[in-house]
Length: 145
Image 1 (cartoon, rainbow, N blue to C red):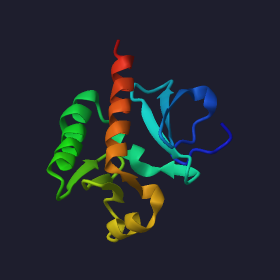
Image 2: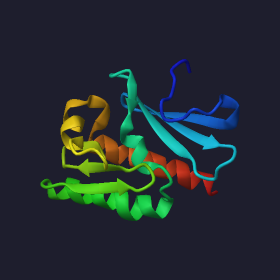
Image 3: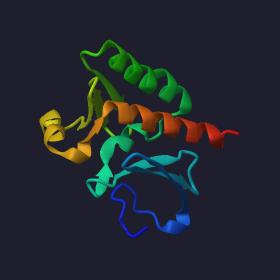
Image 4: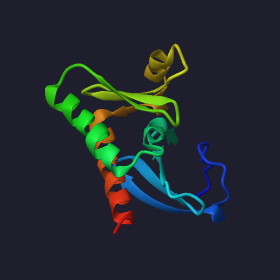
């Protein structure tokens, strides 16, 4: 992989990397040698850049993904109106989940929603966010076996 991941500065010998594809996204699953918490990064092949949606999963366990993230996404999609916010205190990021589009925002940025609306790397269709969340959950569950 020749691209540089802006979210991690570790040398390749300090982690193992597994990749999986979903539509035009390449999911990168990182398992660091000195950490029990794997991480996910999402490469958007259409935009040729990383999507920031992976930040919401940092240090989030299986139960929280099932009970908080997936339940929230499912609820928003099924009711077809309104939005909900999923936050991550470790990365100070949130995802505004709307029935059609999910936006990554940064908690300390006053204009974060506007910035997300103008930056494609901070956006993802909610159905894609849902599918990627399920794939990440399956990966984490496979590690526990």
